[in-house]
Amino acid sequence: QVQLQQWGAGLLKPSETLSLTCGVFNGSFTNYYWSWVRQAPGKGLEWIGEISDSGKGNHNPSLKSRVTISVDKSKNQFSLSLTSVTAADTAVYYCARGRWVVVGGTVVWFDSWGQGTLVTVSS
Amino acid sequence: SYELTQPPSVSVSPGQTAKITCSGDALPKKYAYWYQQKSGQAPALVIYEDRRRPSGIPQRFSGSSSGTTATLTISGAQVEDEADYYCYSTDNSGNHRVFGGGTKLTVL
Image 1 (spheres, rainbow over the protein chains, first blue to last red):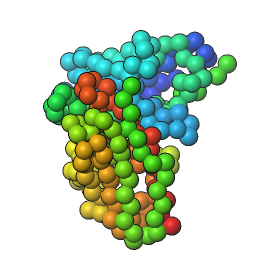
Image 2: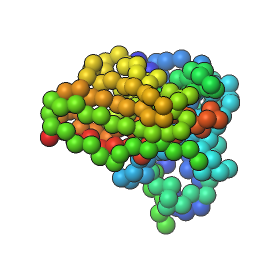
Image 3: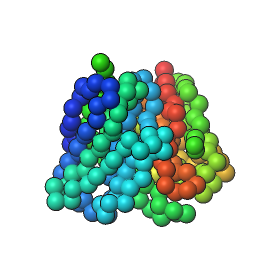
Image 4: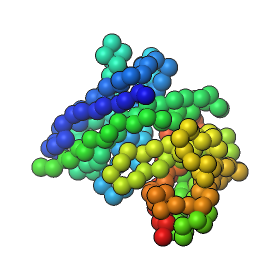
């Protein structure tokens, strides 16, 4: 059973950079999309972005160019960087493993999740 | 940007059938997925590719899709099924993933 374990700073000041890392244990790192999803307090889920094990990525256009998702195959880890954070970025951030199927394009869906990390942005 | 629309809440009595809908323009061509999220927990997949059920998910959970609407059905809902349910899919470009706004299911 694959396990995703995530870590990173939980308290940031406005304009700082959010950095989270997710480690993949007891499972293959190849042939999956590695993704990030967040959930603001009391709100719904929001897809942030994804990266394949080969480095192909997509991200939510609403986050513009603030998002970078990278992968380190040698460590079975992937990371999220979100620059210039504001209070609106306060949320629980989840990493997730994405399985994929080609149906009129590549469809990615999540079958395993990390435990979530609460990131608070406050001055 | 692409949107998936769900009702904010659905309420049923134990043993009744709960239906949660999800509307989106790309659903005729893209699969719908359903996630259950209980309070304080990470989401869990309950239906994938419109109607397929992951191992370990009770048979009372089923999915269907017709036109621009996908539906999650819980036949004989139980108190432990109380949770937020999110539909999920991909836009027509195939590059961007979207969650619906979520539906709070109350069973009492």
